[in-house]
Structure formats: C-alpha cells, structure tokens
Image 1 (cartoon, rainbow, N blue to C red):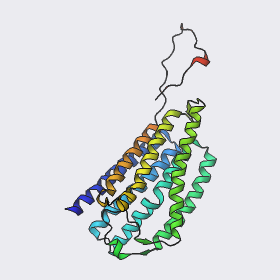
Image 2 (image 1 turned 180 degrees about the horizontal axis):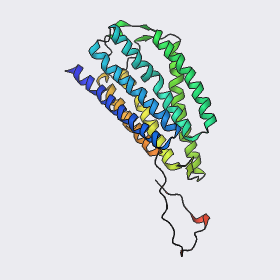
Image 3 (image 1 turned 90 degrees about the vertical axis):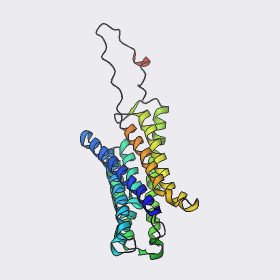
Image 4 (image 1 turned 180 degrees about the vertical axis):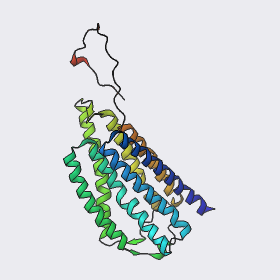
Length: 260
C-alpha cells in the first residue's frame, strides 16, 4: 500500500508537468517568444524525468533497465531542469545576443553534466530504497557534483536576477519590458522562484525531516506554483478602450500604467 501511495504522488507529477509543458509549448507556437520555448523545454525535461522515475518502479530500480531509467530521471530532473528554467527567465528580459550566449554556455555545461551522470557509479543499496525519495546519494559523482551544483545555482540565480531586475523597473515606473507588463513579470517571477525553492526543498524535507513519502507531493506543489508564475508573466497588458473623437486628449504625464 505504501508503494502504491508513493507511486501515485509521482504520477501526479507526470500529469502536472505534461500539462504544463503542453500549455507553455502552445503559447510558444502562438507567440514565438524565446522564453516560452526554453520554459517548455525545461518542463518537458521535468516530464521525462518524472516519467522515467515512475517507469523505474515496475522495472525494479536495481535492474539494468531500472538503472538506465534512474539515470534519465537524475539527468533531466536533478541536473538540467532548474538551469533551463533560469534560461527562460533570462530570455524573458534580455536581448537575443545575451540569450544566445547564455544558451551556448548552458548547452556546454549541460553536456558535461550528462556525461558525468551517465558514467557515474551506482550505489546498489541506496538504489534499492529509492522509491519515494529524491535519489540523492545513489550516483557516485565525485567531482561531477560540482557541475550539478553549478547548474542548479545558475538556475536559481537567473530567476532571482530577473526578479530583482523587474523590481528595479517597477521602481523606475517602467510599465513594460519587451512588450510584457512589468508588474506581471515581477509577481510571476516571485511565484516561479517560490516554485523552484519548493522543488529544491522537497529533497531536504524528505532527508532531514523524515518526510520521505511527501517528496513527490512537495514537487507537485512546487510545479503548480511555478506554472502559475509562468502564466502570469505571459499576461498581456489590457488594451485601453478607444477614445472618443470628441474627448479631450489626456496629457502624457497623467497617464497611469494598467495594473494586473
């Protein structure tokens, strides 16, 4: 019964990340915004990771197939997702040149992480008890741990950086950034940051508070909060109603930005 409960939490994450990835990809196909492309890629990685985790359970974690599925889960979930979410935040407010430079750097570091995780040794004893946990300590990464830390730190720093940048723009009373409402970007990034922190904290809660069975529950909550942030950042400013031809012109100094 406990195994079924743990699997059900993971299945919720498969459904949630699949839906999120589909919605953001649909937004990209409609609007062709680079940040939506990178966010949809990150969400697709999260979906592949959680699906691999779920499939690993009936395949038996310590079997040859189970080990492969665990590596896929760890590569896309623990290593890459956060950093690619951060790239989406950078693309949201940066020029194409800056975004391209970050994309190239991230692609190179991601390749190093994939090689490190794909060739790392496996602790069979830890893997046999992986169900319901984050899987930390299963792969014997050695120096490869630094690459994982860099990727996850870069992702969080990018989200926080965009958050601070949006706050600065708000303080300067700039109503929009690259056609998107500044207040929406700010509060959207607040939610994205909270979602990322919840995802990052899920493993810590399981390890240090003994909440092993709630790891995937916290992950689902984190993804829900994160996705609300993504939807908010993509909201367009309301278009003002057309002015009457007989109405007096409003001075520019008295115009106020539309609030979200």
